[in-house]
Structures are given as C-alpha cells and as structure tokens.
Length: 236
Image 1 (cartoon, rainbow, N blue to C red):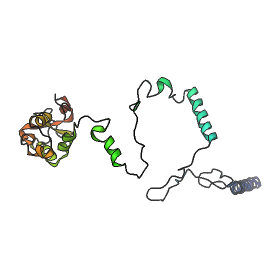
Image 2: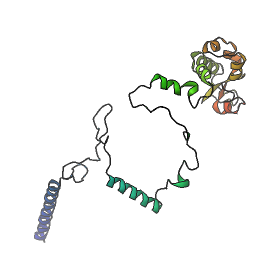
Image 3: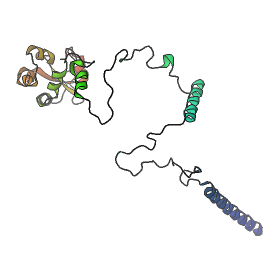
Image 4: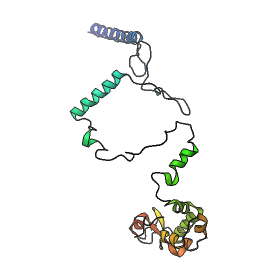
C-alpha cells in the first residue's frame, strides 16, 4: 500500500512539472503577454489593457490615435454590428421619429455665415468680430441684462446681500428656516428701481441710495423667493 502512494505522488509531481514546462514554452513561442495573457502580434506589437498609454507622463499628451483613420473594413464591421444589434432590439435606432431632432428646425437653417470659422490658435480679424458682436449678433436682445449683470456682480451688491443675511440671522423671513440656499430679495423690485431712477451705468447704480436700502431687502430661501410675484420678471 505505501508503494502505491509513492507512485501516485511521483506521477503527480511529473504531471505538474510537465504542465509548467508546456505553459512556459507556449508563452515563449507565441509571445504571450505576462500581464493580461493576450498573444502579441507577429510584429511583437501589443497594447496591454492593464496599463494606459500615457501612464507616468505629465501635462497634455498627444493621443496615440491622433491623425489615424480607421480602415474601411473596420468601419464596415462596426456598421454591420450596429445594424444587427438594432434588429435584435438591444440598442435603439436613431432614424425617423427616434431621432432627437425629428420634426425640429435647426437654429441655423437658411442662415448664411459670411465668414469662415478660424483655425485653432488664430485670432479673429477685427472686421469679422464687429460683424458678429453686439447688435449684429443673431442672439442680440437690445442690450437687456448687461447693466443688470454688472450691478449684481459688483462689490456693493454682494456686500448688501451679506448685510441683509446678517441682519436676518440667516433665517428665511417667510418659512423661518435657518440656513440653506438663501437669497436677498428686493421688496420694491430691483427692475422698478432701475427704471424709476433711469440707471444706465454702474456708477449711477452705486450712487442710488434706495437700491442699497436695508429696509427694502429681506432674506428668503430659494423656494420662498420663487413664490414671489416679481421673481425673474421684468429683469433689465
């Protein structure tokens, strides 16, 4: 009986050794990647998925595939695979009513651009800039919002907002909840004051006393501020 056990052990050892030798030979002969286990090409080129192409490099790097175009055969394979998946219902089709732009008119339909889009790192000539800026821009709305934005971004407005918050102890004056997303609300609307005092410049707004009057401001949370009748209305 002991003799049988020794025979089994020795046979198992030789079996494992043979497997290791065969495996090592297979890797060497077929140039198998030690990290991912994939076989390398005949040219010994291999991009291992376990490591990135830009690993260890700092700053902006040029992509390994920049300027390279995929082969027509590769494009055809991708196209055929996509069609197959659409037929099987695994991915949605983007044709007809399934397309997001179906029935919609593009914003630039019928509009002719009188200049060529500039290349990267080139400055737009002044005569072209004048054609597409200010009142010449397709999205021009008569200068509304320009003075409004300048006032709301100035130091005096931010200081007035903080002073209103401190006075009210950061508590919403409608729901009595402290903290959260707070906003300073003009009791007499901001837009009315701009029109009433005919404010056209930032300096005129700074000199207007009623615009920065503490009694005309109150702390509101965003939810309560949205309920006010003047919220986002009549903005300059």
